[in-house]
Image 1: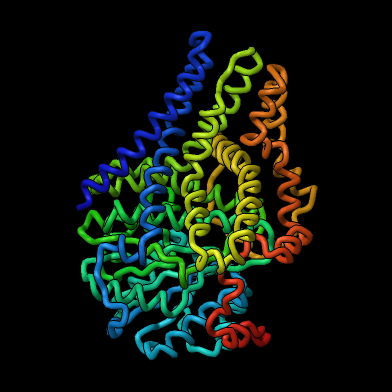
Image 2 (image 1 turned 135 degrees about the horizontal axis):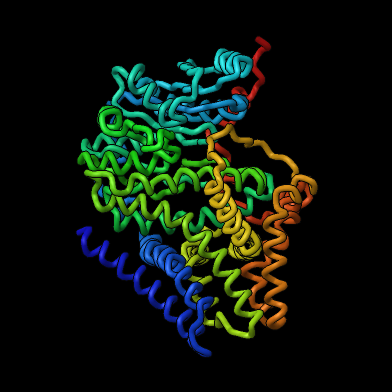
Length: 557
């Protein structure tokens, strides 16, 4: 059954890529071929392939989302949603230099929900700490001592192997008597219903090694994450459904808000250093590929309910996180030819690299297009620009269409008119953000080539404002590149400048965007007009009283 589906995905992706490539070829052909045009065509090749992947996942995903119960339709397992729980499961929360007042309340809500469901005895919660600072570690222990549920706490003083090393050390030394483990990051939140569903799927499928739950953004007042996750939610819902449809039990793993089977994970997912001795940063996709190579399944439950995470509070934190992911994903170039991996495992690694590898190609395309415009040549047509924009954003746009087609679903977002206004605000935001992200990835890759060492530093998750000094200090390269591009475009024609504004204008506004989207003024405006509202904002989270109890500051140690 998977072969026709996979043929459909790759056929649709290839057809999209070829169509986009032909549109560019047709736009460049007048006036003959020179070095700049050939370079532009070459740079567009990986971009067209990535845009094809977007469409290949989006169209099947959208059609499936219109059917009743899409997650069940694509899950390669049949399970009883009311089956009794009979498997001992660890709840693993990984932390490193985190604010426990933010980490513990979601765990409290989960434990309260499990107890209310009569399943609490089957779950053992653990805090796996990699906090190096003794004072912060003491604060962690004090917060846990004040927590209304019993928690087990294990701390390493060395961050060996980063999060993957943290988890494997636990599995090696503390997992006796446990069969399953639910992976939670410091900013994760899962409901009892979502966790129980994952356990029931694993109970029904003894050869399933990982079940990954779809993750959506938690409700937030801050403007940047509010805008970002509104579009991300729509796109990931459609993407994950389409991808699950054709990947079946050879799906991806995102490292959190997922459940894994301890014995095979411990046996097959131990990560050795890379050939140069460095640690693997992005462990999750490789772990999924290794499990699948050993004959264990990995699948996705593409349902939104009960699985959330926090997104970066401001543009600088977003780009810092993106740079970490870039460094980790590009390490897969050392691993993609690893003996024993299945073709789909290699595809997962290739796709993870392609997502970031298109960034320098997009940046080069922008520069080459500006050079052509300065010489009076044309490098694009309206049909090409429109087709490319629709292709790359097809998951999100179809996700928006899915909501607008359903009165019931739109009601959770404040109704169709308010949802449409929120979508318009997010599209404007993303139009400005996309060129900034592409350039920043290119800049980061260049820095790595010049010897900068990637790392995995603690993250700031709290809301904050971004001042003009910080914004200008971080985004001066983006701004200078944007000025150079638009100066060349203006040399050719002001018409070219107007056409380029939606695709590159964000570079000129990188610093103002960072300041504006971190401001309380914009946050208040979005909230007061209920723009980019998500259903969870109007639906009280279960265990709200528990959240208040868990949020009390711990006693001073």
